[in-house]
Length: 181
Image (tube, rainbow, N blue to C red):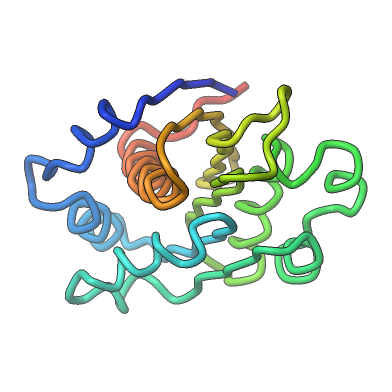
């Protein structure tokens, strides 16, 4: 698992277009080129990632399922996140993000999935897990990776940064693959 601290100002630079168009256009193009089906498992973003994907014409060819699992009950019921993970690690954890990504692939039959879970604030944070802590998972080619991020800004900024970085993670996993442990 990797951990990144992303200030809101630095993250705004990431909102710029990818060299081949918007980031979501690049992701959809890669999915089509690789003949992959995508599923998403979103918690704190509440469908923002799916919204960006479906803004791209032709996304229906590669995107069939988006799970918005805001509650722990939904994470368990829809994605198969283990109750023990939610109780011992919490929903805002690398283990939960990995199980969400795997569960989205399994529930949808997709080839690749990205998941996001975290704290958008303004409340709910602790010293150990402050507001802005986000875990993302990606499941691809039978492997799953989790990454930790720390975003700054208000609730909307944290959610937008999360959606942006989830698309970057998705792109990077398709281009570079997921390293073996």
